[in-house]
Image 1 (cartoon, rainbow, N blue to C red):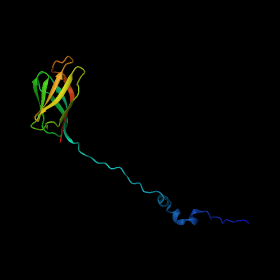
Image 2 (image 1 turned 45 degrees about the vertical axis):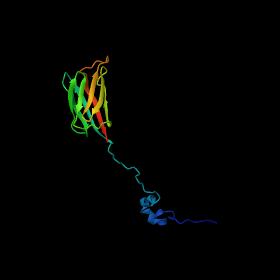
Image 3 (image 1 turned 120 degrees about the horizontal axis):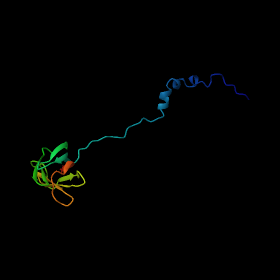
Image 4 (image 1 turned 30 degrees about the vertical axis):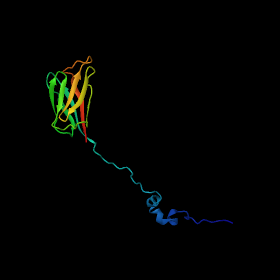
Length: 147
């Protein structure tokens, strides 16, 4: 038995005219919509911070290029050879203040330590342990006060 197929039988326009004109919509009906699952939330750190590049020369107090300051006003003082202070008015919380300082060159050891609610001491020492001036050049100082 022969089967005769009428010309144009397989023409999509005659089989499914509603899909021919809306082919894109028809294809999209099989693809679930894309839902973004990425959310961006910004949370504040649990501390206030003072970050600066500090430089010291002679018997002058260190100078600073402030990169970030959410603590408040901080000034620097010269105490003695190799001893300096970052001074505030009650902005450093006792037992909740952390200090970080980097070496500005290979011949200097820098130390920063919170003393009380009003000051952070910065020490500059030579490799032999002697305190020295003129050895801090754009060292990064970061003081964090945790809540």
